[in-house]
Amino acid sequence: MVADLPTDCEDLRRRHAAGEDPRKREQILQGARQVFMEQGYDAASMDDIRRAAGVSKGTLYVYFANKEELFISLIAEERERLFFDADQFLQGDRPLEEKLRVYARRATEAICSDDVIRAQRIVIATAERMPDLGKRFFDRGRGARRTGCAPSSRGRWRRGG
Image (cartoon, rainbow, N blue to C red; front, top):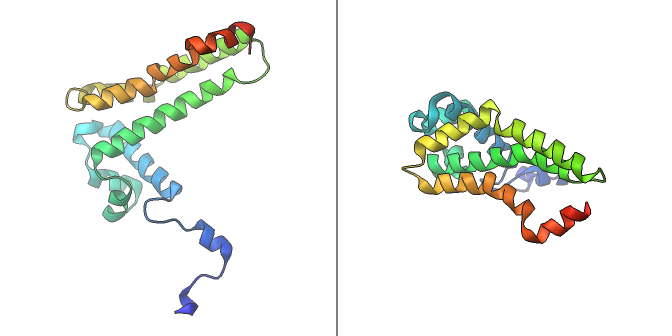
């Protein structure tokens, strides 16, 4: 039926294939964040997350196959969000000493935030059952911070670049 097809190109660009809408994914992650922070990983259910996110069960499972996958995605996104702000202070033309001081302060604020501490507790509580989660948490957190200080980067830091 030609009459049922959208004719507006903008409308077509806004549509996403199942599981590819970044706003819907973010909506689910926000619901999951709320539920995991309130209940912890073990007590949280996909149904609790679905309700908190305001999505159907079908929509939830299109984006995330299970609670573990959802939790891992949430942890990865939270780490990225928290450290992106600190990382941006390493860019720019300011003196190296100032960059490092600002970076250290922002990274410390992020690491010591209530949200990160809660997330760490949840990860620690589940690490025995899901050792890969603990490794991913480390790799994306403190482990990832080390890459900026790799030997190949040190000369650039010494030169102030």
